Length: 144
Ligand code: IDP
Ligand code: MG
Image (cartoon, rainbow, N blue to C red; front, side, top):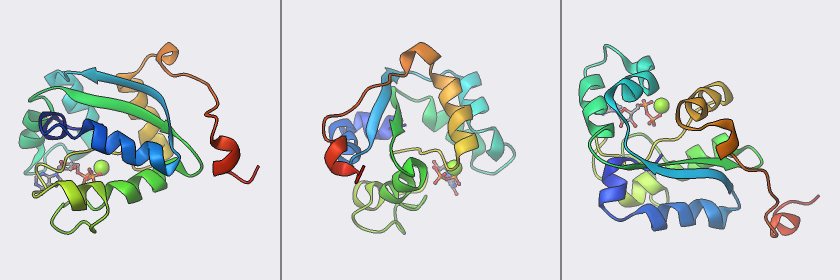
């Protein structure tokens, strides 16, 4: 998910380009506004933490781009491209390392495990919004 700061700062193209160029395949994508209940559900694991209310505010403060990516070891590959949670500590070359300044405005969200990916995809997408197709470069991205 490209968070509201990423959308407002016109970083959608820059960010999705990084995933595309890597070889990850978008099988779903849409621009939405998250309502408060959905934000609370998405971030329920952080309920009670000092930053929780601010996080709900942040994520509902403007449009976000939600996307579903597919590829070999997609979750860990995406998390590596995204970088550490705090952009100040994130390695240059990562999205957060290159494009953000503060942990509370860290530009992008990425699922951290298959179970959370499944849960989060279910929050934002209906089954018929996820596509199955081959990208023509897959023959060159993968050995077989
Ligand atoms: P992640 O996004 O790298 O998985 P999490 O620890 O799951 O990081 O935290 C979820 C989100 O909560 C972060 O991306 C960030 O937006 C916000 N967050 C986490 N820690 C802080 C903090 O200390 N201050 C403000 N916001 C925070
Ligand atoms: Mg997380």
